[in-house]
Image (cartoon, rainbow, N blue to C red; front, side, top):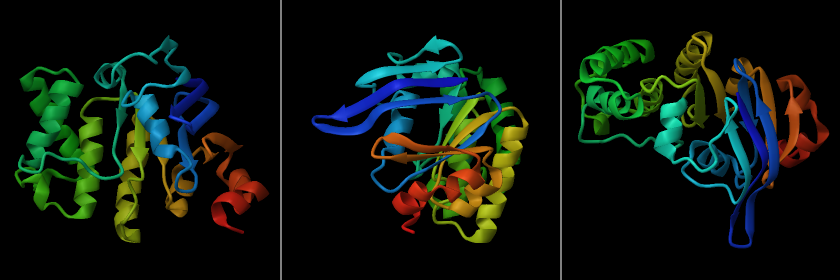
Length: 235
């Protein structure tokens, strides 16, 4: 579904992503680990089109999308959340998701309303639908990030530390929604520092270090890797 071919992203002399190659197959949940500064969010920004690559290619479903703008990639089926939720605070939860359905999913208003309600039900936000987004607690802000992405009907979903800051019970509730999203046919790439959450749902893990892939494989194999223990776990 997604292929990153010798991808690089530089900021002046700083190489944040460095000659990285990675394939993601349809139906995977790929968990991405890495220490702070490893380039994880920059990688998502390059995949989603927020930043152009300095070199290399982003190929989505066989098409080179490296030069496409973020909204064009969104309309092709790449959706994402942000580590720090970015709602329209003055707008209601329902209106926030409607914006995503109309402008990201390119739906007519009647279809967008129906899709918005469907997504709110799916993410557990129906009881918050008329509340201004700025009044939401953290768990519901995370749910709203996910709801906005899902309203665009993505085939590839990029989750950026969506479990960060949640209690174990809140994390469990969010994991159920991620599992259900995957079960409906969405391929997921998930950056996360909450390892126990990631380990429970990921079909494969990759560890990013200094802008390159340090290790990739099953969650058990990756977490048992000695270099991963040294670089990421500090063991």
